[in-house]
Image 1 (tube, one colour):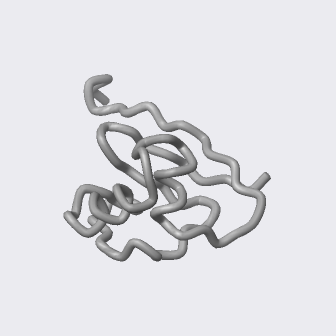
Image 2 (cartoon, rainbow, N blue to C red):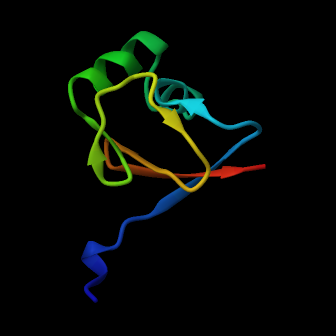
Length: 78
């Protein structure tokens, strides 16, 4: 396997599941506001489990991987 294909994944702990997708982006400071989060999701710039996701209120569960702007976030329950 080529190391260039490996991406770092950041573990993100949530206290209750599910969490809406736009809240994950805001919580991790990948966007400055919930409004911006909703725009980048609607524009098709966010993935959930390697699939483009355009639903801003998509329910995110532990085990899901959210991708945006070169970041990959693995959601875990704490």
